[in-house]
Length: 318
View 1 (cartoon, one colour):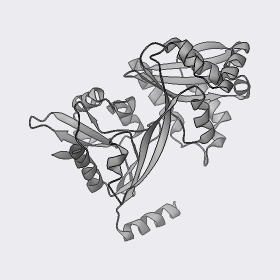
View 2: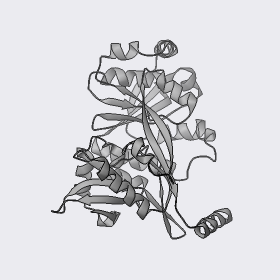
View 3: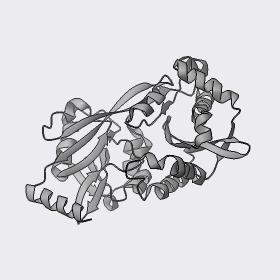
View 4: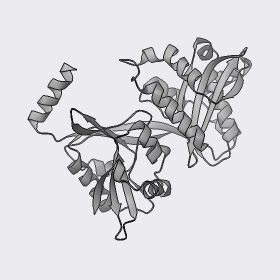
């Protein structure tokens, strides 16, 4: 039987054990990460007859006007149905049935598992395929670099000639400032008010647990670009990056990525570029010889018509 539990009702140790044991487990699904990015998250839990957690599906819940709905949070590319055992299609469907029964309005919910074939069986749901780019670290650096596209190889050589100095940071303020001054204007409507506060909280929590590496590219002692890498279960996320004009002209972020891949090559891990759904950015990450990995955004609105009307009116009045 699948039960919906609020965060306060959840056995955190049992929940995290499910995430860690699952082949779909990523750092996004851990309880402490979700506590930061989606404080009101809830969870669908399948318990064994002895009360043990067999499978869990975390649900990022928000509340507005006293109404609960599902919305994918910042710094959480996708979630999944996690279990330490193989789940049949029937078991997976039970979770999805419970999801749609419990949450009548799913504004956005990104999942890497269950698979698209099962999600598509719900005619009222709208499914969009998203993509990230990943690169295997279980090979030599020479093999990785050989797979770079021609332009990327050229820009790596240019970056090497620029003589960047790499430093390891222990605070993310400089990287946040670079993003705020040189990238935020490219976001329609600007950055969410919580972005930088949340970024700092995630950095500190990851740093404390030993999952974080922050690299800066400097010239003449001045930071010109930065990249934050987060690694858990041998999956490294290229989670946040920024560069000023000099950093961009000098291919500083290309240099940081290339040097990171050089250092981690042969470790049998996976490097996830965390691709945005923007063609130019996706092409940039593809130029490193990465491959596409798909996940899916789920949307569904099963609310009565009068509720939808009231929701729209209140949003217009904000």
